[in-house]
Length: 228
Image (cartoon, rainbow, N blue to C red):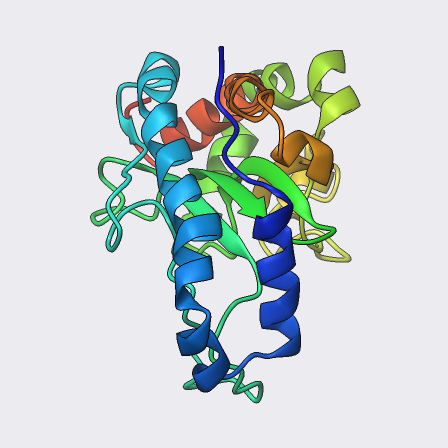
């Protein structure tokens, strides 16, 4: 029997944090963050480790409190006009073992009131990484279509982010994958309801999501000379 990780209290805390996004309030309610957000999320990450290893032995679900898969609740406000110190959401990245050497695709999970989703890929890749992926698409269109043009993929997932309005410089506007070559991001996924997030079905749902996305992640890894 699978366990339940998140609860109504998880979402109540995140909604309250959005309304009271300041350090005094957070420090006064930190125990609620630990109990209802961080501890259950770390337990979920730990339980994802074994099924993730079956999808790819080169990916890691790291349940450490800091430096692992769970994103910090603190925002980086140095270059932002928004100086709110905390994120009113919780997210985790299941990363490639070589992520510190190469900008690598990840699997991702996001929990927020009205905005829960899971997916994977590369979000805002650096120009050099984007060029490697585009060049690989030009040379290997059939494998990309097998990974992302199936009925199972199309019925469940959507790509995220905006595309260029015209072909990127140096690429054939008539290429069969021109719409993919216009992508600024190579990330896809799907939302799910709060009821699922708070149910015993969350873990099997995530494992199934990551399995279905694995061919796309595998392709992106190949484009970047990473093992999958």
